[in-house]
Image (cartoon, rainbow, N blue to C red):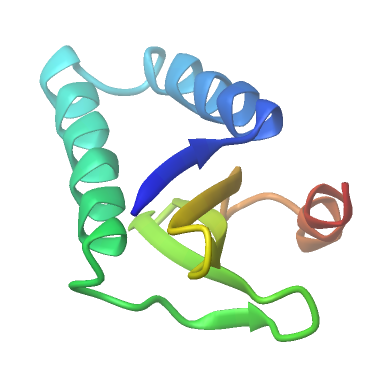
Length: 102
């Protein structure tokens, strides 16, 4: 399946990655990037299915790291996976609800 990043996903990934620069080494940042890519590839090839967190919108949650997750939706008929947003799990969940409704 093709992976399609939303504009919001690109922005939130960049924000999280930039934030990591202040706390992590370059090696840890590369590992995070590689974990993200690996997880997306496993989802795209249907090696794993992440749990549904919003049944109405069919949104699934993928945990990249204990502090970072991304949310996505599958469109089986179009053979696409839409990455909606990345989220720092330590943030207020109300913020996440706003992001998922956009």
